[in-house]
Image (cartoon, each protein chain N blue to C red):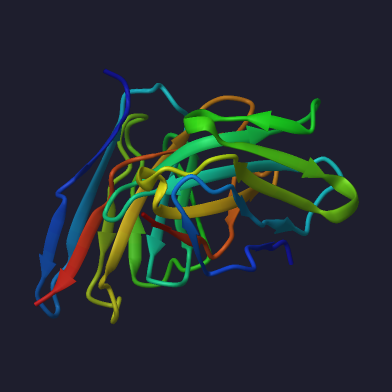
Length: 112
Length: 112
């Protein structure tokens, strides 16, 4: 069955440090991949998406993600984390039937 | 101002009662979705609709019902058959070939 794995349930980084959140997908040679962010009690906001083309995708709020087909990965990165980045992050894959398969999420805490 | 609205923000259900969660979008999107979110479990798909007057069950449809009489609206009813309804409910829509889903702010359902 199609699945998306986010290996890290909770990550803590210091403000100003770099960040990488991991995501592995299981379906498709040309997947549709997404990263969303959710603040407590809020809906999900789209950070970035990948469909084809350049494997390094730029998103909002200074985030980027790199698609690596050989590793079935789509890791999210940010060079310098701000306290306001503390939130939960979800990776998702489209199954080309209109549905998204979500990972379990990674909760990011930021130390001052 | 285009977007997705969900109401109410908080909803209380008494035992044996049906309650309806509202989801409205003015993005002119064809597809709409309902997800349930529980702590540590990511998002699970309840129902989705790709066109007016048609909808399909998702992964956890038991105890829920929907209708799609208008393109803009996709209400979700949590019936008395849903024995564990306490959760955060998210509505989403998509309308372009990229199948990107955009989310509303969510409704938190609590049981009295």
